[in-house]
Length: 291
Image 1 (cartoon, rainbow, N blue to C red):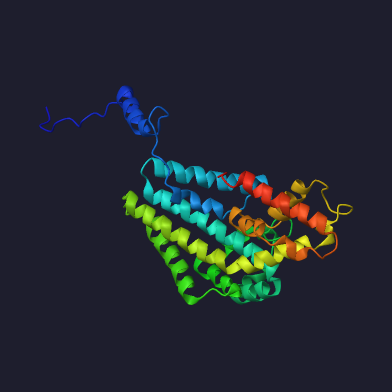
Image 2: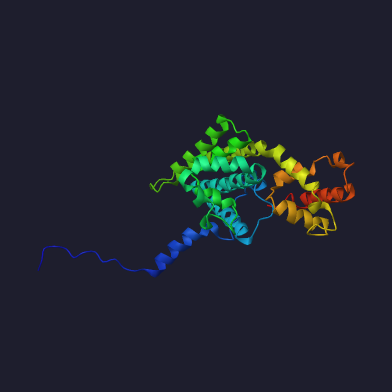
């Protein structure tokens, strides 16, 4: 008989495995009250479009929102941080998409400088929708480099440095190094407030341009003239031809609703323009509290 002891036998214990799974799943059970979401976690949605171009864009934002909330509710702050960063970058990309409309020539020149031999590829089929840029197109540019495009609207080096710092920090947290580096809720919320401060500074850069775009749209017969515009109903016209067309966020709609419509009083068909402006203001008020 051998003097060596027999190797241990690993038994499959279904009950123990089921109990372990139940223990892990218990924190997300509907029977247990979830922590209240801090206001800071809702702020990024104010800067994202109120209406999306298609259902794919809408589902993408909804998926990120659900992932971020679920991570936060279960104390997985490092993952909630990374998902919030993705929402933050999405808001940035929508700003850049607007710049492509507001400052098209400067944007093309800046993209050519940034991309060089990848310029044509950027506008290719794989990076566009129906031949047009969309917010996801800008993900083809390195995140630190993409911020350079904001110099078109006067971004200073201080803000650029803060934005690049956010990317570097996200990269530090995203490495699969087996460590959870962000485990404190207080520290996590401090990071989130920093994101919100930066996105607010980015939007401040485009405020005047957005108001000019709104004013020029109101003065465009194709928009205001009831006989030729796309939608006779003022609310539908505003939703489709302003909110959706330009991917306006609630933050931008708040600027537009405060536009002094009386300055157009002497212009042609002022009554229709005023009616459309009132429709936009009403739309904002009815939807301002929605996430």
